[in-house]
Image 1 (tube, rainbow, N blue to C red):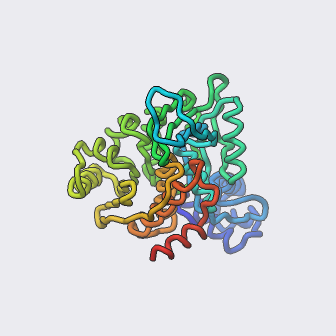
Image 2: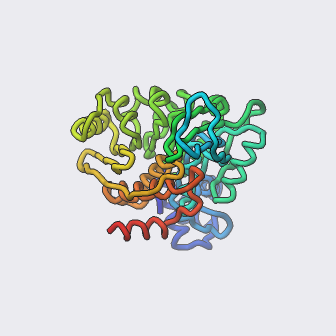
Image 3: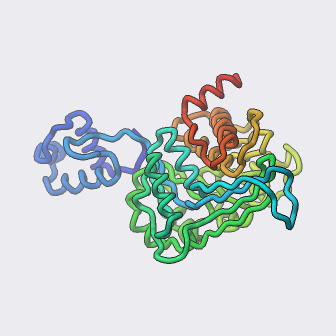
Length: 367
């Protein structure tokens, strides 16, 4: 069973139901020296929290994740040759569902993790495309917020012929309109799961609300960019886990990273601020992890880069998966690096071939 928050009475009821799933509410009330009405209320709460699936008191043993953040349409153009500035460059253009938190959610869903995505969409073709993709891979998107005007958040990236990003634009107006009232209304969904994953593109008041009201949860954060990281810098110590790149780590720790020594110093500063775990991605060099009791470097596999835009999101999904399965930090970083390498080999931000079997096969080949 996962670690979703239960009251003492709910815990007692759940233990009885696991042992005697066909017990009546009257019998439950007698065992607990309580009233049938009170027992009924507690059972309804267990249903809302996801422990009971329906009639016959079917017990859920799924460990879940609630992801809150950006969903967007990725419009990606990759040049056939080296880009020429201020000129029309021949290339290939793709349109796929993306967004940092949505990408993390899809990667987790492909690993059979129960994932609920709270995001902002618009009633347009882009919003429909995202909703359809989420439903196809098994992401629960039923708690999304829909704006009545504007366009669904959109990301445009121009890639060099080697797959590295040259320039990008991100229109997050739809996400900016996500009201805090919608998050509060879905508070029960946040209580349901062990881990909350967010990105710093969320409105500041929502981020503040989450860290202040769900301190009993493990909140994982992706800064998205140095510009967006401004919203989490003052409260960075309130998160459980940070996944970032070197530029973001440098900004959040207020230290210039020039080599491995300063990289480790930056991670140590962030841990001192209150973070429990820090994962810093290093591109082709792999990644670095640190906690209060452990630290180290993990290399990555060589891969021909098709599209680099979703590599960090796949890495974050690997970090979350490692936490859900109690991996060591070293194993988590290795697992996340492998997911990142798989993402790099895909045209879309999320590789549709992502699976536990593929990850384990690549891990075995690396030894």
